[in-house]
Image (tube, rainbow, N blue to C red; front, side):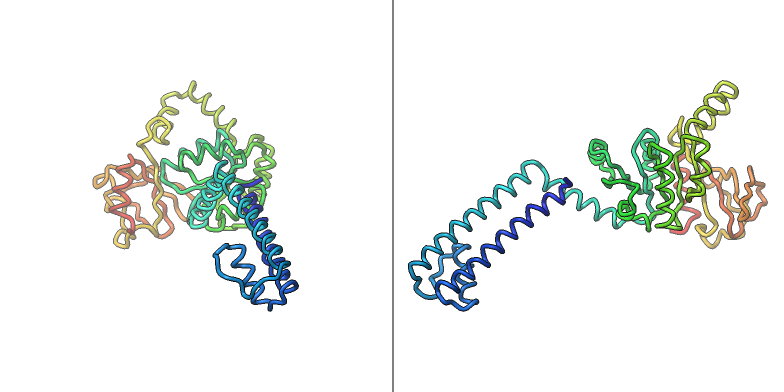
Length: 338
């Protein structure tokens, strides 16, 4: 049982018992002593709270016996309440519930984040890259041990089943920038992609796939990109033999061999107004920051590799910049809107 459900059950029982005693006490005083409902309620409350106020009117012998039974009942409820709440504190249920509530509140305030479904081997490497680029993310995971491991490293994690719409909504998917699904089976990833696309049409969805025959189904389900780790890994291993220098260089510039090196994409709209319509030579990125513009993506999706210095930066263009993390930060400080 979830901590929230357990706490809710205990509190519900306590409130039910308290309401039962107050109702029975009020009815008893009205029948035995002829009190009005307000007098009976007042007498019941001061009796079970043991505040020590006097009776509304002198009690009959029957009324005194009823008051004794009412006090014993209220003491029993207090004892049960204290023991139940103490048990919740001792076994950590209350603390876990409060921690879960705080985390859900934090997740509900996220904007432009990435939802990662599953924390297997692939998901672990996804999170490493997201943390390296300081990208906010939330992990959806159902394994209690994995959940505790992620929480121990101060990561946002949402316990639940990624196949359920309610879980994706709790991950604040409607305000996310992307979703990455790395679940164990291709069918689960297809289902997550389908649900995510329906809930958040704007979302960029990247899915892991183990079987090439399923890749097309993932694209139909709504995935923007499908990654086949076995295929990529096998190709990379072969190239390590056939073209080792090239693959080592690719590893270097993608951060696998040297984590201080990074690519960054700069959209035309993000550039300060004074740089619109300038040529690459006029931007002078290399001299001012040390980073290099290694490519440009045009609005029609075409890539220009090693763009010429006289290329003008026009609306819809995207600059692909390569450099160290410090150099990339300089690019952002000089060329981008604050």
